[in-house]
Length: 112
Image (cartoon, rainbow, N blue to C red; front, side, top):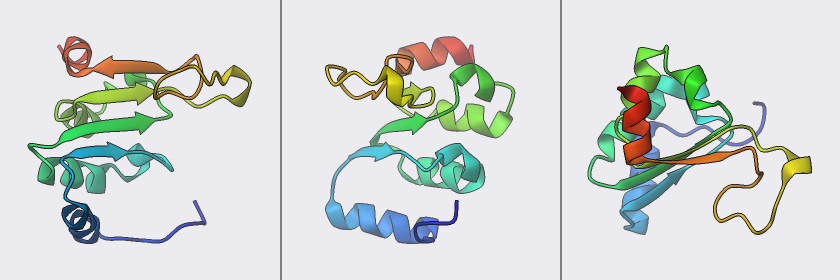
């Protein structure tokens, strides 16, 4: 919380545009601690493939309207805290065995 640098959503978008990729990964810190900025960023990236990593489980986010709106606009979610003792280097994009990879279709099932 005390480290890193502060960027506006516009500055982040400019950096993404400079890279030119349409495949975007949003990870931590914890993205959902900045829900308003995250919602603005995800909305501005419409048309990109967006994968989001969160320490929350999706079930913890479903009661929040802004979180649901964010989840409805992404292509994939890795949920659950990284737990060092559950680390497995054979996992594809998740770091520990307690984390789940949820596709757009699975997200829609949770969102109803």
